[in-house]
Length: 377
Image (tube, rainbow, N blue to C red):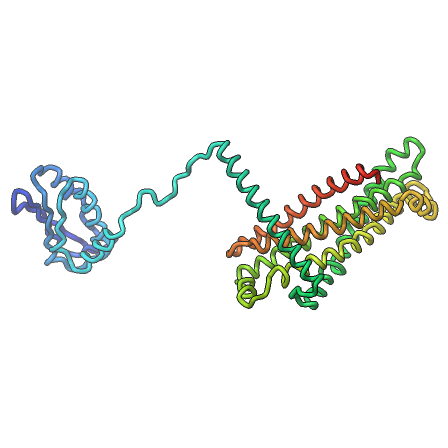
C-alpha cells in the first residue's frame, strides 16, 4: 500500500485556521494537495493566521515540504502569517533554509540589443587597444634583440637549437610539397595561355620570376604561420596557464629574452633558407610541366630560367622571407603571451596567432611590392 497522509482543517478563532496533519506524508504516496487549504483561506476573508498540528504525523519527507512551500507562497501573496511552531523540527529548518536564499528573478542576464554605431565604436576602441599592445610587444622585442647584441640577453642556446630544428629541418616536407605544387600550377596555367602564341618557352620566365621574387616566400610564410606560429602560441599559452611565465618573472628572468627571443632568432635565420629551398622546388615543379607537356628540354628550360631571374629578384625574395619569419614569430609569441588562464584560451591564442601572422604577411607583401616599384627594382 502507498503511504497515506490525512489532513483536517478547523477554525479555533475568527482569524486563525488550524491544519492537523496525520499519517505518512511521503513523496509518491496518496497526499492531500494544498488546494483545499488555499480554498478555505480564500473563502474566509478574516483569516490571517495559519497554524499546524503535527503530533499525529507518523513520517514525512519532501512530500510534506512541497505541500508547505505551496502554502507559504500562497500565504505570502494573501498577506497571511504561516506559523511554523507546530511543524516537525527538521521541516522548520528546511523551510528556513529555503527562505534564506530566495529565487532571484533576474538571475539570467538580460540580453540587451547593441546598436550598430555602438558595435562599431567598441570594435574601434578594441582595435586601437590591440594596436597599442602590438607596438608595446614589438618595442620589448627590439630591446631584447639589442641586449643580445650587447651579450646581456638571458636565454639557453640549447633551446635555440631545438627551435631551429623544429622550424627548419622538420618543416622541409610540407614546404617541399606546397612549393613544388605551386610551381607546377603556375607553369600549367601559364602554358595554357602562352601556347596560344607559340611562346611556351616563356613558362620558365613566368615560374622563375614568380617563385623567386614572391610566391616562394609567401607560401613558405603561410605554411610556417600555420605550422610554427600556431605552435609558438600554444606553447607559450600553455606556459601562461600553468603559471610558468609568472615563475620566470619571480626569478628575475625576462620572459621576452628567455622565451620570445630564441623563437624570433630561429625563424629569422631559417626562413631565408627555407625560401631558397622553396625557390628550387618551385622551379622544379615548373620544369616538370615544361618537360612533360610542352616538349621543352630541361637544359633549355634551365638556361631560360637563369637568363630571366636576376639577383635582385632573389634578394627581394630572401628579404621577404626574413620579414615574414619575424612577423610569424612575433605574432605567435605575442598571442601566446596574451593568452588567458583557461584551456580554451590556448586554442583561441593559436587561432589568433595564425590569423595575425597571415594578415601581417599579406600587408608586408603589399608594402614591399610598393617600395620595390617605387625604387624600380
